[in-house]
Length: 114
Image 1 (cartoon, one colour):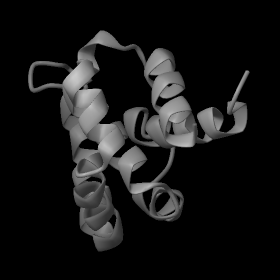
Image 2 (cartoon, one colour):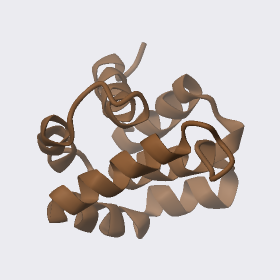
Image 3 (cartoon, helix red, strand yellow):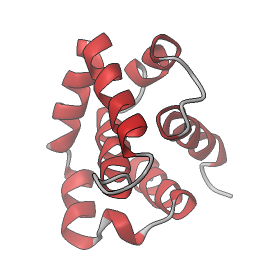
């Protein structure tokens, strides 16, 4: 599998926020080391899947807000990532809700690393 390590790392970042498996402080450093486009894409996927009507939305969206509040660097990276060409490509071509976690990670990592 191409980019298997990178896919595992992206999935780990997503899981930190989605499942709350790490504290905000523990999640802070790995997110600060990530690609800004990846940060934006992960947050956008989470917002699409955990919309206001979803029972877990408060926890997931709260962790995104908490992470961005605890780390101005992560908040800045997410804003920067929104302008990335890969993000524009994805949003012009796909819908976040059309992808489950694994398919999304596979696609975006391949594009970011390829």
